[in-house]
Image 1 (cartoon, helix red, strand yellow):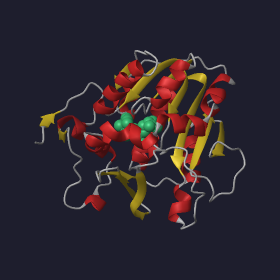
Image 2 (cartoon, protein in one colour):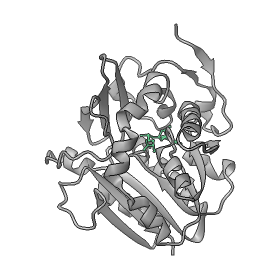
Image 3 (cartoon, protein in one colour):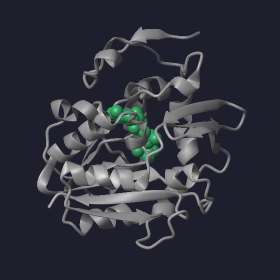
Length: 284
Ligand code: SAM
């Protein structure tokens, strides 16, 4: 039975999201899913089954092996102590950062993902996560900074569908950083997908061996992915296919002075090869 309730969370100032009915059990894409190209729609996507099964998709142990100490070393080498995990999801990076001793605040716009992260924090090391339910576009309203670092990982920024929203979110991240702070943001290699070039096939993010994550539809304005789990359950995410240099340009426009882009955690790579890019953007 579907449970239709009104969700008015502290972090959702978005006028549409705050009054929309969100079905907490089922993803809702309406009659024409390919027309769903809306920044606020993630609140209808990270609900129910995909939240319950997200950790099967990412596989914490394999993902930790794949990324190694990349993020921890990026942060440590800059003397970072306080971190805002802006896209906490189910808490993978928040827990890794807490394990490594960083003072971590965990934000996300999906209350269900955050609730799962809180439970995961307790179960993985007894961490009581400091969680904030907040949409990036209004983050400074809900979160008190400044932080040494903001991270937005796991191909999360791709959920913003308009340039205005992307610029707004980056401005919020920038405002929450100290004068010498660093933003670490990643993205799937959509250039390779849009340009029809094969990527390496290596998997660093969606590591669950039993789960398939495949593009269902891709055009310049939409990457709709289908996630199929053992037993046949299927979920979808509608995302905007960000091009690497476009995002680098936005970071520069926001005011970041130095932007280093890594391909699958390596400094040098062939353009079409990496599965993911990671941008490390310094404010100073
Ligand atoms: N970082 C986690 C990981 O790597 O497993 C989660 C990644 S998941 C692909 C994207 C997350 O971003 C979801 O938890 C979603 O709720 C959050 N998100 C998407 N758009 C958002 C927005 N506008 N404001 C706040 N959170 C958002």
